[in-house]
Amino acid sequence: MESVTIQFDKESSIPMYIQLSKHIGMLIKEGKYNENEKLPTIRKLAASINVNNVTVVNAYKNLERKGYIKSMVGSGYYVTYKEHDVITTSEEEDDSFLEYDNINLMSKGQLKVCKNTINFASANPDPSQFPVEDFKRAINEVLDRDKGLAFGYQESKGYKPLRSSFTQFLKKYMDVEVAPEDLQIVSGAQQGIDIISKALINPEDYVITENPTYTGALSVFKGRGANIIGVDVNIRGINLSDLERKIVTYNPKLIYVMTKFQNPTTISYSQDTLEKLLDLANKYNVYIVEDDSLSGLNYMQEDNKINLKALDKNNKVIYVKSFSKLLMPGLRIGFIAYPPEMQEQIIKAKHSTDISSSGLIQRAMQLYLDNGNLEKHVEFMKKIFKKKYDCMNTELKALRKYGVNFIAPRGGLHFWIKLPKGVNALELYSRCSQRDVLIVPCNIFYVNPLGAANNTIRLSFAAVDEEGIIKGLNILKKELIYLLKCDNEYSEVHEEATLSPMI
Image (cartoon, rainbow, N blue to C red; front, side, top):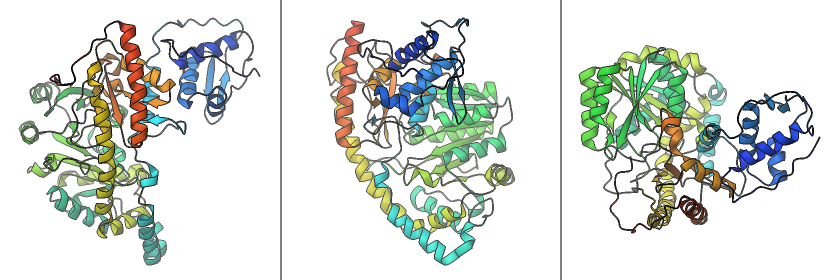
C-alpha cells in the first residue's frame, strides 16, 4: 500500500478536498493502489497529512462519485478502478454540491472535527456547561423512588406527570394553555416533526416552509414524499402575500415556520405577522407547525415573547418544543402540543416510531423541571451566550467596512451574514476550513440549494469561546480580503452605511 503524501497549495482557489481527491486518483491510476485494496481510514489519513476529517470525507466522496472507489458500510473505502477503466466524469466540473451533506452534519454537531477547529457551524453548546450534577441528582432520585419502573415502557403519549409539568411550563413562560391530554412527549424536535409528518402527510401532498429553513424539517418532508414549496422571509417574518398565493395554488397540508430566532436567518416574527398568519390558517383551514427551540434565549429586555401558539384560538397551530439547545442535546426530550382532534393520529405515529421515549429521562426531566433547575440553568446559559453574542456582534461590525452586511438578532445562537459582492460563500467556507475554521454556507437551508444565491453564511457562537470567536473571525476576515482582491471588486464601505434588508 502506497502511503498518501501531498503538498497542498493553500493559495490555490481549488479546495483542498479536490486537490486531495485528484492526488489519490492519480495514485490509483498509476497502480500505487490496486483494485479492491482498502484506502486509509478517514481519521488516519487526516492525521497523517494534517487536515480536517471533513477534507478527507469530501475527497473520498468525490472519488466514489467519479468511480475510483466504493464505500463499504462499517468497513471503509476500497479501490474499484481497474487499469483499463475509462473515467468519463470531467475533473473540472463543479463539485460544490459534495460539501452540502457534510456541512449539514457539521451544523448539527454530527460530524467529528479536529480538537483545535474553531467551529462556527455547530449550534450545540459546550459540553462543559451542561448541568450534569443537577441532572444526575434527579436521575438518582428517580432510581431510588421508582426502581425498576423507571426502565419500563411509558404510555406512548408520555409520562403523565411530565406532561402536566410541561403544561405548567407553557402557561408560566408562554401564556399558552394546553391540557396534558393534548401533549405528546417526543425524543427531540426532529422526532416531533417526523411524527407530525407521519400523522398528516401522504406522498404528493404539499407542504409550505419558510425559505430558507431548517434542513432537518426539509429532510423529513422529502422522506414522506411531499412536494415542498418555499416562501421567502423578511425582517418581519414570512412573506404573507406570497404565502397566501401559494396556499390558494397548492392547498397545503401543513405550513412549517420558526417564529423565534429563525434558523438560519435569526429573524423573529412581529406580532402583526403572527396575527395575519393565523388569519390565513383560519381562512384556508390549514395547520401551522410552529417549531420552537430557542425562544428562551432572548437577550433584549423588550423582546416580544408572544408566539403563534399563544394567539391560536381555533386549534390551527401544532407547537413543537425542544430542549436540546436550552439544556443538553443528548437528552433528546421535547413535546408536541397539538389540536385535540388529531390525538389518535399523533399517538399512532409515535407508537410506530419507537413505542415511547425513555422512561428514565422523562421521569428525571419532570423532577428537574419541578425543582426549578431548568429555569436556573437557562438563566445561567443566557449570561454565557450573551457574552459570546456581544463578542461576535462587535467583531462582525468591524467587517462592515469590507461590505459584510448583517442585522444583529435579538436572541438565539446564530448570526446570518450577507457577504460582499463577488465573494462566494462556498469558496469562503472552503478556504476557512483549510485553516480549521468552520462556517455554514446557507445554500443548504433552501428548498432548492443549488438554485439559491451563494452569498450568505451562518455563524453560530454556541460551541466557541470568546477567544475563539476573535481568532476565528480574524481568519475569516483575512480570507474575505483575499477573495475580494481576487475578484478585483474590493471597495471600502463606510461602517455606518444604512443596512438594506438581507433577506
